[in-house]
Image (cartoon, rainbow, N blue to C red; front, side, top):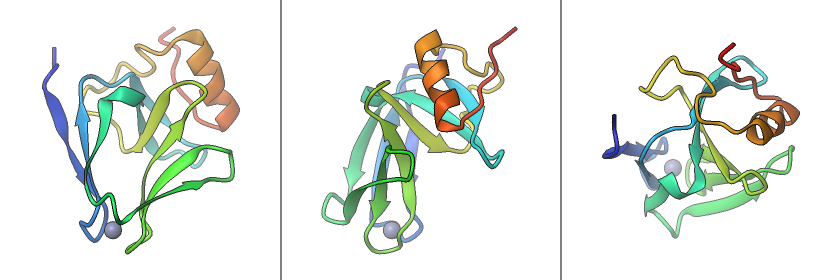
Amino acid sequence: MSNGPYGQLACDCGAVTLLVCGGSLGNGRDAEGEPVSLWPQEAIQLGQGADELEVVPDARGLAAWQCRRCGERLLHIDDEAGMVVLAGSSEEGDEAGLALTTAQQRRLAELGYRVADGA
Ligand SMILES: [Zn+2]
C-alpha cells in the first residue's frame, strides 16, 4: 500500500514541477504504444512554476499542462472523466486498469489509450 507522496515530476527545463500524491488508477499505453499512468485528478498538484505553466487544449480535446519555456507537456487532463494521464508507467506496476471504472475505461479507449481489462 502506498498512500504517501508518489513523487515529484519536472519538465525538461525544471521550471514547472508537479507533485503526485496517492495511488494511481492503473497503467496503460497511448496510441503510439508508449506507457502512460492514469491518476485521479485530485492526486496531481502544481509544485512550482505557476507563471510558466500554460494549459493548452490538445487535438483530442484534453487539457495539456505545458511549460512555456521548454514546451514539454507534463500531463493531460480529461475533465469529463476526472482523470489525469502522465507519461511513463507508475511504480505500482502491472495491475493495468486496476481502479478504473468501466466508464473511464471506455472514455480512455475513445481517446486512443489502451488499458488492460484484467481479464
Ligand atoms: Zn520547462
